Length: 542
Image (cartoon, rainbow, N blue to C red; front, side):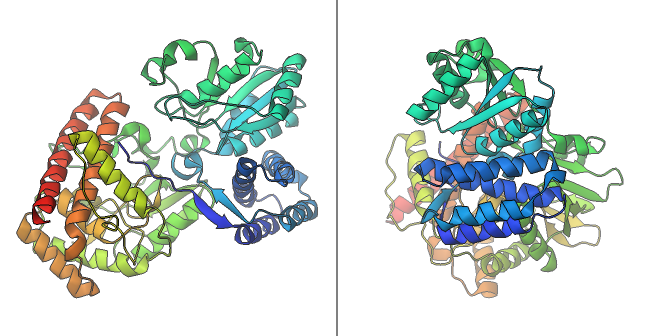
C-alpha cells in the first residue's frame, strides 16, 4: 500500500543560503532554541550536499559540528566565527538542494539531545566512530560526537544513505569511507550507528551494521542506537531476527516526554478514554505512530508535539489562523517543539449526526481553508494519482483507468486531512470547533498540497453521508466559496477511500495491539467497499 509521500523539496541554493546565514546571525547568547534551529537547518544542508557529492560538503560538516558543540555547551559561542564560516560556505554553493524533512524532529518528539543523553550514559571507551544514517542521522551523529568530545572521548563521524527496497536496504561505502572505517577499526573504536526508528523492517540499521562487519569490524563492537525498543521478531526484513541478534541495541528516551510526564498522557490512543463518551465505539488508532500529546493537570490545556524549529512554527501559524477565523482553539509556543492549545471543554460529534447545522459548518470551514491555506506548491499531485492506481490494483488485481489529470488542481491548498466526526467538538457554549486541524495536510502522509475537494471528500466518507447530505454540503460550499467542486468530487472520494484503505491495511500489519487490529480490519473493509463502489460508478459513467 502507498500511504506515505515523498515530501522532499528542491530548494534554490540562493534561497537556502540566505535562510541559513540568517539562522546563524540569530544565534546569540546561549538561547538553545536559536542554536537548535540553526543546527537543524545545518544538518539538512549537510545532508543535501553530501547526497550530491558537492565540493562544499566538508565546510558544511564543520559548521554542523560547531553548532552541535554549541548545543551541548552554549557558553562556547563565537558568533563571528560561525557567521564567517556560514558566509564562506554559501559563496560556492549548490544551484539547488533536495531537502527532506527529518521525521523524528517534525512528527515524533525526537530531540537531538536525546542522543547526547544516551552517549552520556555509555561506558567509557577509548574512542567512538559514529555512523549517521541520512537524513536525520546527519544531525544525530554531529550531536553524538559533540557529547563525546565534551567528555574528552575521541570521536569522529561519517554519514551514509542505504539504498534499495525499503525492506531490504543495502549500504555501500566510498573509498574514503572505507579508509575511515579501517582507521577506526585499527584504533579499536566502538562503532555506533544512529538513526530514528527502526521502522517496520529494520533494514537500514541492519544494512549499515552488516556493511561494517563485512569490512572487518567485530559485531560486538557495533552498537545500533534508535528511538524505541525493538522486538526483532516483528521486523519484516528478510531474516531480521537472527541478523539483529548479532549487534547491540540501545534506545533513547524522549526528554520532551519526560518534561510532561506528570500530566495525563493522551498519546497512543489514550485520548479516547478521556475525550470520548463511555460506550462509544472507538475509532482505530495506530498507537505506534501517534504524536505526543498531554492534558494539563488543571484540565485547561492540551500540549502537543508539533515539531522542532520550522516544522512547529508552520503548524502554529496554521493553528493561529484557524483560531482567529473562529474555527479552532487558540495556540501558543510551549517550547521544545510543543504547542499549548486551550482545551475545548465539550463533546466530540459522533457519526450519524450530520445535521444541516453541521454540514453548513463543514462548508464554512472548507471555504475558509480554500483561501486561507492556498499554496504555490503543485508538486506531489502525481504521487496522489499513483497511490490510487497502485492501491486499487493491489487490492483488486485490476487496473484503474483514470486520466492523468484526474486529481490535478490549479488551486492547491494545505488540506485539513482529518475530517472525522470526533475531530469536531461542540463546546460548552454550543459552538462547533475543529481540533487537530493544523498538522496532517502537509506531513509525511499523502495527500500533501491538493484540491480542497480532498477535505470535502473526507467529510463525505467519514460521516457516511447519503447522496442528499453530500449534495447539500457541496451546494453549501459553492455558495460560500464560489467553487463548483461537483465535477471532481467523485474522483477525490475514490482517492480518499483508497488512501484510508491503504493506511488501515498498513496499520493492521504494523500495530501489535490486538484490539486495534480488529478496529483497523473493520475500517479497512469499510474504506475498501467505498473505493470499489465509487470506482465502479466512475467507470459506468465513463
